[in-house]
Image 1 (cartoon, rainbow, N blue to C red):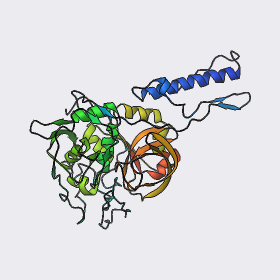
Image 2 (image 1 turned 180 degrees about the horizontal axis):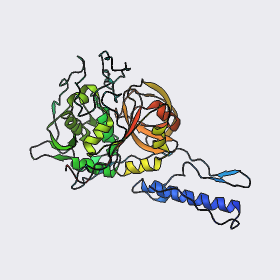
Image 3 (image 1 turned 180 degrees about the vertical axis):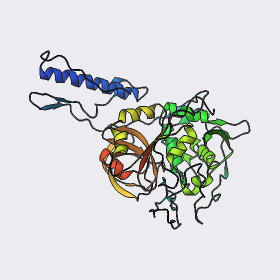
Image 4 (image 1 turned 90 degrees about the vertical axis):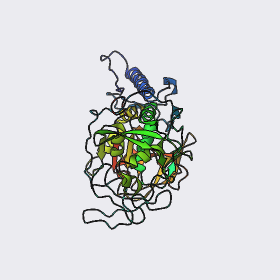
Length: 406
């Protein structure tokens, strides 16, 4: 992370206007250097105007001098990276913080089942396939009794389609073409998409998912602190796709179902648990609280750090567990351009990948992909003052490490 700092010369060494000009130039240069550090392959000339702009206060007049506020700049999405050699999760890094206990609000609720006395009664969203999406359930690896009903029972959508060869040959693609399908595993796919955003994240996925000598693929996961290899020779025919066909998301989805089939197919789960399975380490986790803006502050006041983590292979996911669907006004990125004053629907009981953060808010993407009737698969913007109202929590993963399970 690059700290944005300016220095002040001795009193009387320059006029207030000269000082403001110098400090503004220093701020702009430092901000752009930080932007380049979080956008590999770019140069300072590619950087947009700093946001927020530097405000220079003249103590004598108390009249601020400021640079012109920039328009929102569309972040770029990655394309493909080649597989990297070696490595696996660091089992001792990034300990979990503030992770909710089993039974608290998960990313998605349970369809069709009356809540027990220990549960709140959630609103059931609609999944992209038109079936009821799940609205609660135990986290991955939890020993609680599986939940579900006659419309979604464990094994009802077992992996049924032979996996294609050559999926990881030539590298892991970015997340642009991912579409969730009819399973209730947004918490898994949003996590994978977060890793797909950066070259380091894609390299980690390429080490985690490898062709197996037996045919199919071996997926290296960390389950309850232990390294486990899940062999995948079949994927869900109704599950995740990448540009309309099987992709690395399809393989990981099938592998995670071997850890908790019910959570993938029916009950839903927590993004921080999916992140832990893949990274081998606990995630930084913050929940909404009416008395604090910690979640929004972490994402926006520390936006440079969030962007740096994404660029260095972390996955950042926000959730709407327990909330209802909500109509919002937003800006979107469509065909690489920003469009304002767009009306979208934010899905309750769902997970979204954070693609970029700024001091003003965050850009997110829905794992439902395109097309869908909520946001058409576009990236869209959530202002800072809406983050704690729109989302229940944020999970910031460790990178998929170079040592450990693979």
